[in-house]
Image (cartoon, rainbow, N blue to C red; front, side, top):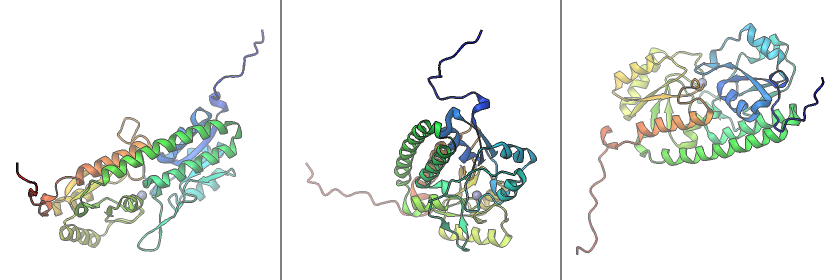
Length: 305
Ligand SMILES: [Zn+2]
């Protein structure tokens, strides 16, 4: 007997009919899953805790990309291995560059800083670009993509407002911190915090002994209050710097990848929130411990009663 089923009320499709999308790293994967909902199947190449700067694609990655109908990349030189993978996979479909429309931050040596996602204002562009890419390749799902993206943008605005609020409490003299690599330039520009690192915007290069010695002197001279390890980098160098300088260990910042799903930074919004909370907790404490005089007790100008 043949049953004619009514059209499903929701827009979800069976798994084999969903849109196959490849995202290069976990932050893009999370945004794409949220915007795509049940209509897409997202395969993320560099997963939670992974370092996309130095990733080596696998044959399985090439197969997955070969079957994808949309590829989502960060751009700004972040995924140096991407062109070779596209070629190996024979991928000829559309590519969303999530940073399209972002004002790129220049590094001190004239390069381009790819870590644009660390500024929530740029996160808006990521969401809009991913939404538009999904709509273009799957117009039947447009209403759902737009609705979920609008909700995500609203949630991001709420997170960004709370970030500004908690970071505003950090005293001016404590707005300098050290991280493993130079991944927080956009964050620092957005929230007026100076991030310093022993290596540049890529983890491909290693810090030289001279770089580390210069950084140790700078931390002591400028009384930089805290160093932070990163989820994607070996913490040993930062531990050494902390021991040599007496700076406080501020905790772990999520720089280029999310945490696993049971960790504190499992989504883009959770990552922004967790990094902000970690920075604020380490930096917004009393200024007295770095030798800054506490404010003099207030004197009463009121009329004693
Ligand atoms: Zn990085």
